[in-house]
Image (cartoon, rainbow, N blue to C red; front, side, top):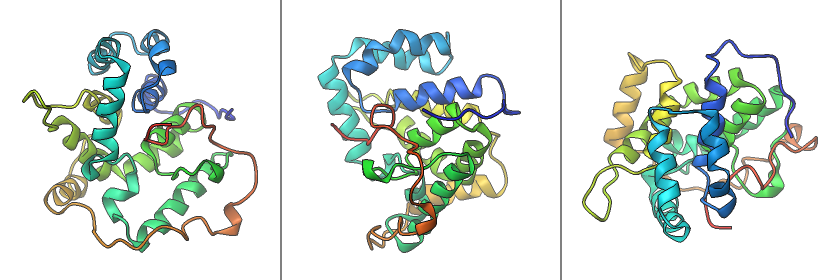
Length: 233
């Protein structure tokens, strides 16, 4: 589906981890569960992901789907959309979304508008990095590092119905963050501000974010079989 570029200077394990996390953070389906052995073979005995694989194998699919929706679709602090944490539903978010599409084009692919998904979905960025251009995805993740860390904190602090703490999907965020540089200085301060203040709350809609004619046309980047919409299909 994607045109693969030359190998990145990142660690050899970065692309496999991102590809696997992209799949594991998708809405659970029979197809995902059937692929768990193949996915785990890409990241054998991963210190963060092994427990998530066990959880996905153990819990019935219907329960996994219910938990996924409650976590990612009904909770703003666990949004899988990277620009949401910095901009909320404000006009400035529209320009940030265009920048994601421009980054994909820089990698030689186009975002498929007809699928109705936003280009800042974490799983899309991870899949792009795993299969098209690791360096561009690295830049996107680090540009929105505060949002990635905010999602990690929200999932690791998630309170379950049985009184335990920690969403099983926190494992994927821990694995992703382990591939990124340590936070320091202004980046750490940005995470603290997000935790204290949360995303901007001005809701103005996003209807104009894809209107740039320079970003229309060309081959599709995303297919419905591989990029999640973050909700039941």
